[in-house]
Length: 124
Image (cartoon, one colour):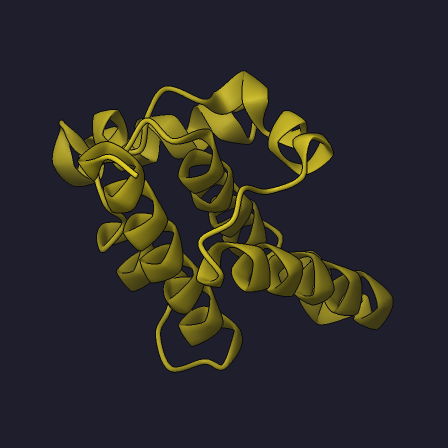
């Protein structure tokens, strides 16, 4: 195993733990997103966008228990897979593929850059 593959696996495990910390309410989504590693790994990018989507749906999650449970289960599946250092199933990665640009590029302009990317993500 080369150094790059080992780094990707370690980054996936770290991101899996970040998602668990959000699901267990030990960390808010914004804090978790700030801690994401700079990566072009589609698995990490997918997790990033899944968390942004999770945050964007806060009002729906509050009103619809079934939606909240389904979204929590989806994030838990992502967290379990990444915590094991594995790749996410192709269908999960494909759900967010239109938004992939790399997690690092979203923060180049700081908070302003995040807001612009978030607006683009929710089609404003």
